[in-house]
Length: 148
Image (cartoon, rainbow, N blue to C red; front, top):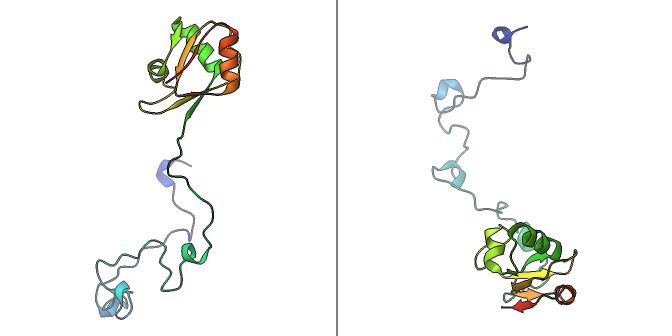
C-alpha cells in the first residue's frame, strides 16, 4: 500500500446532488425547496431558537435566579503567588502595576488578595481588597495590607 492507491471505503462517499439543473434532472424547478414560504426564498435566515412557530424552549422554561448588576468581580491572588512575585522581583512593595506586569491581572481589574499559601517576606501589598486571613498573614511578617 502506498499513497498512490489510497481511496475511500466502498460506499462511504457519493457525488453531491446537482440541484437547479433543469426539470429532466428531477431536481430542477423548485430545486428541493418545496413550494412557497420563507424557506423557499433567497435570503431566508431562520432566527436563533426558532421552532417553526411552536413556543421556543427558552420561553417554555421558567426563569429563576437573580444577577446583581452592581456585583464587583475581583481577580483572586493567593499569598503564595505574592511570595513568588517578591522572590522574583526582590521588591518590598507589591502593587497593582506589579500584578499586571507579572500577567496576574489586567489593567482596570480589581484584585483581591486571599490568604491561601504562606508569606515569609516582609512586604507591603497594595490591592483593591483583602481577606481577613491575608491581612493577618501579611501583618504577621511585618508587612502592610494597603487597600486602594
